[in-house]
Length: 285
Ligand SMILES: N[C@@H](CCC(=O)N[C@@H](CS)C(=O)NCC(=O)O)C(=O)O
Image (cartoon, rainbow, N blue to C red):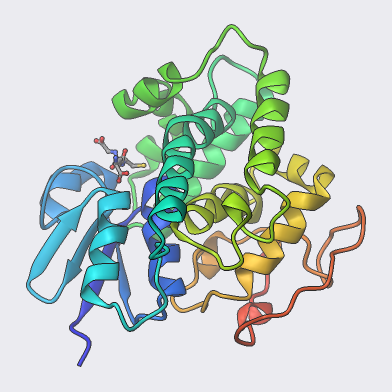
């Protein structure tokens, strides 16, 4: 029997989203506990950061080690890492690139730094997503000052510091996306592998979540048909319970959804392992 599994998360935490996708891929039933940012330590069963994952009586932190732990605990469920050691090392290397380049690069965009209407709008939106989804919500004063607060959050500053901020943002984004496409090595999955791995599941939410909650600028991924096609391939392996983005935080349909607002290029055919169940979600206006 599968023990009770609880993921301690924030809706837009890129590291917690990685674990969310691992669990969906492994087809494990789980619940999300949406931690309140005002009392992180109190809400968490262990440590001071999300994600934390409790499986039965045991809790672990840190996204990638959680993935390895899930493969150990549930080897009969789809594996996150290949058995072949060369492929396994390749996957772990790409995962490192995701944590040290893709995710910090995303934080330069969302919410980014400085004062521009787009930055303030995105920071406000992120505050609203957090307020609407976290346990107990946030007081109005904090919601209103969220764009200011985000500029000073320590871990966000540390992540932004991992990027080369002398490179203009547009150029840095284009480089990240082309590096990502290179890492597909012709696909269908990262590292040129034939099945998704921990690396695909770590990268997937970094494109999908900012887009689906409606952050301005996230729609730039629609200009990359290779990325959209890969997202749609990975999606077919995921269950949607619980959904990556709770309904109250949804603004856009899945990127490239034939029923959504995708207009650039055609999505290549893919053969799903299991019928995907994501089409039922409806964006809010
Ligand atoms: N290396 C960790 C990083 C986790 C992390 O940075 N979590 C952030 C949210 S995205 C957090 O909880 N920050 C709160 C804090 O540091 O106070 C992982 O991969 O899980």
